[in-house]
Structures are given as structure tokens and as C-alpha cells.
Image (cartoon, rainbow, N blue to C red; front, side, top):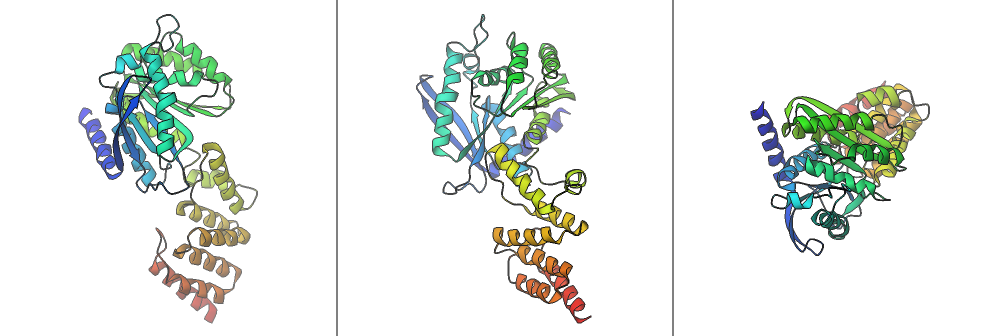
Length: 382
């Protein structure tokens, strides 16, 4: 099992190499010293584009950055989550000082308060000035740093929208403070926490106790997920938890899958096309950035439109696809499909022929277009 998790970590490190990894040193007035950062940009990152990307801050970046960044690179490649900017803060030599809290108030003090200010007053402005980071921010931590991330929740306007805590070594009273704070949230906040059967006993006990407290909260603004993994120790649970946390945080962003298609799209009372528009508007409202139309969702809406004999949706979808992908075969394919359903095989044939000159997509290539063209010709001649 240990070898398995080692292979998983190596796998994501190799993936990470494919992305744009940058190593920076930042001068900090708050800390009075320099700090090393690891920064991963999306594969096709373009500083001149108008789009922005979710920002992920990883504490304990000396060992936690690579598995987090690798997972993000992998899942975003398959469009399961958005492209993100990932920033790891190396703390190998400063960890105990960075995460220090007062033994009476249990809030950051001295070097811990300075590290808190470094993140909020220096690091975040630095990243936003130099990179296309959005206001949707996520922070990751492990044991001591998983306790530290909670302090950002107690600001009047929390700096992060999502918190990922792996086997947190919680300060005294943190569990009850979290329960109270999370119950008061008026803006949507994600909170993910995980432990395991082979976790450090004291940490496992306090994590289970805190989970029991948070689970009692009745607040529709809180999106909470807890995992108690089997057959994983204090370190291996991190490898299990990263993809689970990302799946929860970006659940709304995910492509339309079989479950959503069956349980939400098909029963939707309005036009199938309206379901697509609403889904993408909800994503932009919730995450603060626009999602680019993807082929998986196009296929899902087309399938639902065909099944429900919703020709209006099919026509609107085809026109939207032509607008979004003017050089792709997709627009011609779906507009041809609409004309076929309408019984206008002459127009359908013209679309399929014209589409042969365009660029193939993931699912539509010349063979597909030729087959549709022959079908339209046969129908036209009969």
C-alpha cells in the first residue's frame, strides 16, 4: 500500500512537469525575510486573455504543492474542474514559527500573526498583480497548517471561499469556534475535512469530534464534506483527499454526466437549451468566472433535445456552437442535425458538405460528417 501511494505521488509530479511551474522568491516586509513560492499556471495560460482563474494557496508547499498541483493539472485537462493558478508556500525551515498561535487566545501571535499578514497583505496582492487570478480562492493545509487555514474564516469578509483541511491539528476551542462561525456564514463557503483509520490518534479524535459539531450546522450557505478513509495513514490520506475535495468544490462546474442528464436535464420543464444557459450562468455567479462551452455539454443538450423532440433547443444550440466554435465542424454538424429533424434534407446536406472543410472536434471528424452527408443525400433522393 505504501508503494501504491508513492506511485500516485510520482504520477502527479510527472503531470505537474507538463504545466508551467515557476519558482519565485518574494521579499516580505511583514516577515522581514524572503519566502520561496512554487507557482503552477494553466497549460495554455495567456496573460493577455481577459479570462481569470481560481487561485489555490497551498501551505506546506515544500511537500503538498506537487500532489495538489498535479491533481489540478490532471482534472482540468479532462475539463472536470477549471484551470487554476496554484501557489505553494515553502515552509520547511519556518513551519513552527509560521503556524504559531497564542496559548491563551489560540489565535495567531508574533511570528504566526506575521505569517497571517504575509498571506493576506502581501502574497495575495502580489499574485493578483502579476497573474490572472480570480476572487474565487481555495486554501489547503495539513495537520498544523490545516488548523492555520481556519483563521482566515474569522475575518468579516473571509479571504477564501473554500478550505481544505487534512488531518488538522486543531488549536483548543477551534472546533466550537468553527461551528459558530460556519453557522453564521452569509456567503457560500466550502469546507472539506478528512481523517483516516490509521491517522495519528489524537488528531483523529479531535477531527471526529469537530466533524460531529460541524455536522449539526443548519446553514444552506455552508457546503461541507467530511471523509474518514480506510487503510490510510496520516500522510496517505492526503493523496486520497485531494481529488475528493476538488470534486466537491467544483461539483457545479463539472460536465453534465449521466446522473445529471437523467435526474435533472431530462425532467427539466423548460427548453433543454435554457437548462444549459442557466447552468453556465450559475457557474459564473457562483465561482465568479465564465466557463467556456465544452463539447460534452453540447452533446448532452443535443441528446436531450432529440429525446424530447425539442427542435427549438436544437436550433438554438447549433447557432450557439457556430458562434463559439466558428472554425469547427461542430456547428455544421448540429445545424445539419436540426435541419434533418425539421425534414429539410437539402439544407442539412449543405451544412454537412460545408462542415467537411472545417476543423474536426473530439467527437466529430470527416468520417462522421461524410456518414451524415450520405444519410442526408439518401433521404433527399427518397
